[in-house]
Figure 1 (tube, rainbow, N blue to C red):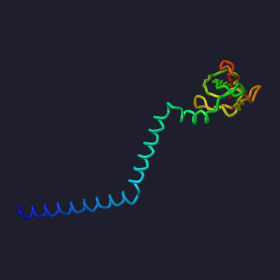
Figure 2: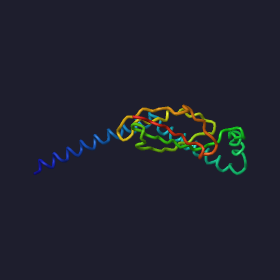
Figure 3: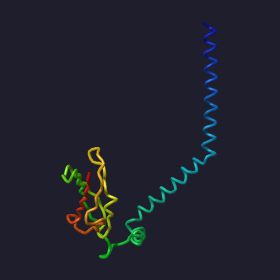
Figure 4: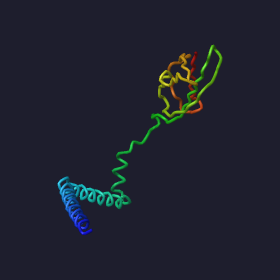
Length: 152
């Protein structure tokens, strides 16, 4: 019984020594890697940002921000939504369709072929470009409907 206590005591001492070595290595690594320097820099940056936030009301920061903002004029593009309808035909008979929506800007040119989705119901279809291969987006979303046809 006494022999077991001695082994347990020796194991405890060895464990404590290993833990002290690990702590020493960890502290040395933290100091040498500049971890504390990064923390000090982050504190400084946080203090500077807090000071800028306090000055927000007196116009110092607002003037800087306003100089960076681009104010749109009437000639710039307007954001608009467009719908793409995929119609799938087998032997000339419509067998199904899918719809999706996307966002663009008025005046954007949409390449219809790039929107094609040739797989429907685990079947491969061939995209058949109708009258237009390109579509120019308009300001009004209801005018932006692209119908793509596929045949099998």
